[in-house]
Amino acid sequence: MFNDNMHKSSSNINSSSVKKGISPTYEMAKEPRFFRRILSENITQQIKCFSKHSLSSQLFIMPLPCKEKGYILLQLRSGKIPEKDSCDYEKYREWRQSLLKIACCLVKNESEHWKKIVGVLIQTPSVGEKLHIDDMKFNLLECNTWPDEQKEHYRKLNEDLNFFHTPIRYK
Image (cartoon, rainbow, N blue to C red; front, side):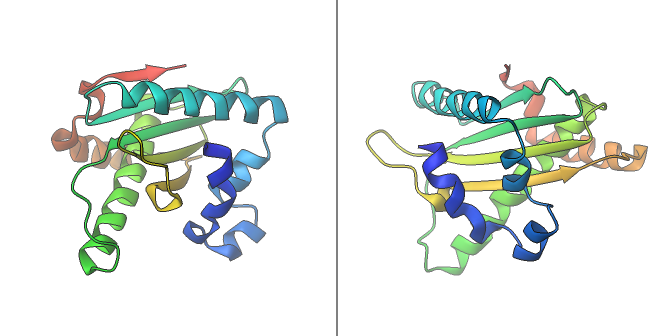
């Protein structure tokens, strides 16, 4: 399910960035095949587990053996989603992308040794529904430097979101 949709996500990524080698999917493609397989299996397993619980969101963190890059999966429970042809839907998509970026930055606050964080956001489908590409977002946070001001900025943003006050799963 995850692998099938990943290549279709290029609409979420600036094509000039891909040519320069700066995109979340490019970072994922650089991983060894066995790791991509493990990553895909873990994401698929997390989606299945999440659909069985009543949580409204879940943050799953997967570090890499190289210790300089990590992956996060942010899942949101499907709720009332605006119609795709409405202006509210575009605002909703932007909100989800912002939420993913904030989650990546908060993980950076907790894992200061990571230089890159690849974030995947999935709007978990309701039981019996299929996962659509519009339900997925990707983010690449390149964070070689992480000033205290930035760290504090995202810490304050998290006061309302409470990301780390809800279940987080490390793999």
